[in-house]
Amino acid sequence: MASVFAPPARAAGPLRVLTSFLPMEIFTRNVVGNTPGVAVASMLPSSTGCPHDYALTPGDMKKIASSDLFVANGFGMEEFLGEPVRRANPGIRIIETARTVIPIRGGRGDVNPHTWVSPRNAILQVREIEKALSAARPADARAFRRNADAYVARLSTLAAEFDATAKRFRRRNIVTFHNVFGYLARDVGLTVVGEIETAPGQEPSAGEIRNLSRTIRERKVPVVFSEPQYSPKIAEALAREAGVPVRVLDPVATGSPALTAYEDAMRRNLSVLGEALR
Image 1: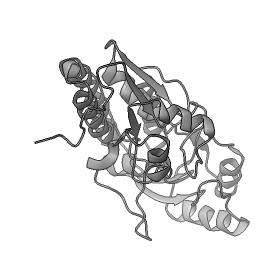
Image 2: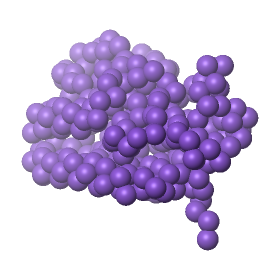
Image 3: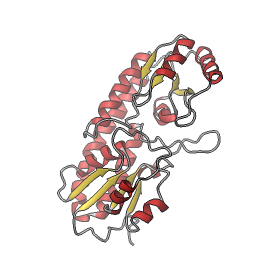
């Protein structure tokens, strides 16, 4: 029975893997490791952030046309998946790594696509990448499995650290910049009671700020969390009105593609959460 991840027609030559944005690049590079003949690149610069509403450029189309595999998050994060990518390269294999994650849905039934901001979900997504690479290059399947196993062990340790620290949280209501930390909150028993931006790039009105400030006071939210890739001004204004400090949580959507970048950023997040919620 043929695998759903059938090898590309050009599998005998170099395997060219294109990732959609930073977290997918980090995960893929960890699975590939030093395997010869496999090239990993990111379509978006590591400074772009989440590709909400991103429109493909002619340069992107060229990258897609010259690749064998396209590693994406899925769940609607990359809205350009499907016809635009197929048009650029009909033979490319698209890997939606979040497909085995249990989704979080909003009030309108829309799926929260920020699955990777959870070590437990990251493990599932890494395994999807491993399966896709192994199917595309069976001769290197053992190396991909070995690399994925090592990375999953590190991610499992990270998840255990979050679990241990979460047991000491005395406060469990949080306000975030947008809905990027929903899966992490589910993992560690936090409740997101408010978001500063309810739609990507749409700043809250003065009335929304007042209502969110009231929620912070009523629900005894200890801090307002901002994100490093956005201006802190709105978060700071909200925090002043609510009388709480601002702290930064990093969803690992921008930064370095170093092999340990995800773990490093998430451990910084863990330290911030441990301090803010004690």
